[in-house]
Length: 365
Image (cartoon, rainbow, N blue to C red; front, side, top):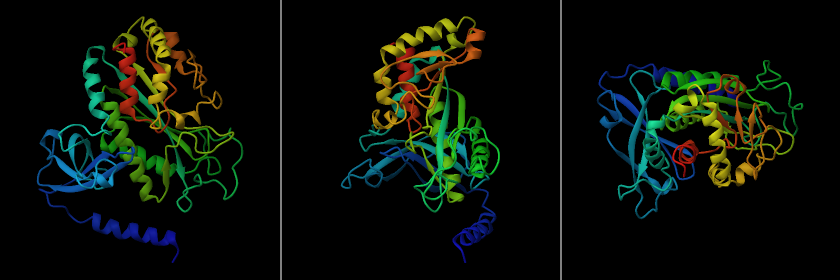
C-alpha cells in the first residue's frame, strides 16, 4: 500500500470517530499560544460548558522548557485566554482559544509581544487605528519539505510571469489547501478578506482585516495556526521564509495597511503624507522590528528588486510597489484612506509591527 493510500485510509478512519456524537455538556477547547521562537503550539482540555468570553475560561499552564520559554528547573508557564474562535476541525461547540503566555511571576513572558501591543493600542484608542495585513507564504512538497510544492525535483519551473493570480494545474499548486484555509478562517471567525496566488509558483497570499487595534494581531496569529493545521491534513508544509529561493524569484512579505480615523475622513491624504516624515525618521527602527531576526531575514528580501524597496533608504509614492510605503492610487484619487507599509517580512510578528506603527504615527515615539 502506498503512502498516499495510507494517508487516505487514515483520513477515512478518523472521519468515523469524528462523527461520533459528542455529549451536549462537553466541549473540547484547544488552547493555542506562540512559543519562544515564534512557532505555534496547542493542546486541548475538556470543558463542561460552552464559553462565551475568554474571562470564563480557566487559566492553564504548559512546560515552557519544551517551548523555549522557561528553564527545566522552573518550567511551568501560564496560559491566559484572550480570544475565542470556533473550531473548524472538531466543529460543534468546540473552540480554539488564543492565549498569552505568563511567567510564574505573573508577568508577560519575554516572547509575549501581545501584552505591550495591547497597552499601546489602548493609548491610541481615540485615534481609532485600523489595520489590514497581506500575508504571503509558500507551500512545501509533502515528501521533500526542502522543495516548493509542484516544483520539478532538482530543477526549476518556468520563469515568473504566468503564476500571479494564475489558473490551471501548470500555473498554481496547492489551491486545495488555500480554499480549505479560507473556509476554516470564515468558520472560526477570523476576519479574512481574500486570497490570491502570488508571483512565485507555490507562493500564495491571504489578507486579514480591516481590524481595529489588537484584533489584527489576534486574527493574524490564529489565521497562521489555521493554515498550518489545514496544511497538516493535506500533508503539505508551510513556510513564511521571506526569501525561500535565492535568485530571480520573488520573496514573501506581510504588507501592512494602516490608517487612523483622521486618515479615513475627507482630507485624510494630508494626514497620510504627514505620517511619511515620521516613518522616514524612524526607518531603521522599523526595519529592526519587521522580522524576528532583527532585520537579517528581511535583508535577503528587501533588495530593491522583485517589487521591494531599499533596506537602507526610506521611500514612498503613489502606486509605487518599489517604495517602502505605497499610497494606493485610489487613496490619492479620493484624498483619504490608508497607507501600505511594504517593508514587513512574511515572518513578522503582527503585534510588534502594528505596535511600532502606532508608536511612530500616533504617539510620536
